[in-house]
Length: 180
Figure 1 (spheres, rainbow, N blue to C red):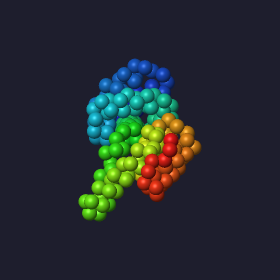
Figure 2: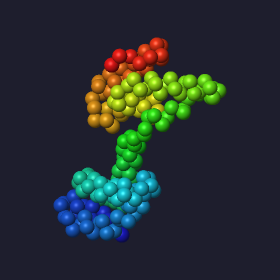
Figure 3: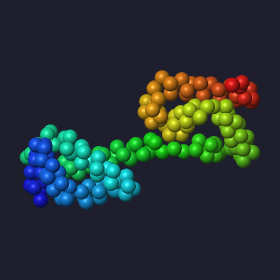
Figure 4: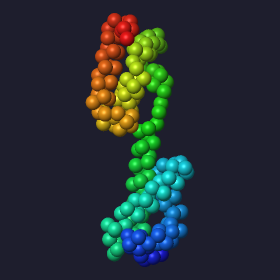
């Protein structure tokens, strides 16, 4: 079987569409198993298998025929699955307002006051500022990660973080909402 996989990969690099179909019949179940073990979601895993076949077709010309084609395919599938998992985690949306309970171990009254102040300070921010502040402080995103996940430039994300932090500092110093 492994020799046949190697032959199919070489044929794919030469543009043989039938070889891709034959390769799919041989390894797609194993590829799905690998993808499922990483992403833990069947729909995403099926997408991973499809994306893996696309990568196999694009990379077939760089495949070394005397190496283990099966391992090569498994590694491609694993890498595509890890990228999909990262993308899912990066694009996961959380309601920022649900995280106000994550304050310190202070007593309940002080925690309630802190919670209220933080919630009020966050209410001074635009939705974009809330999102980038949340990503920075709760998800440990870099400016580059936030820019990529939101489809914005790094400079606009950086400005939003700075603006949001300044609005929150001003609010916390004065205890009132700044004029908008």
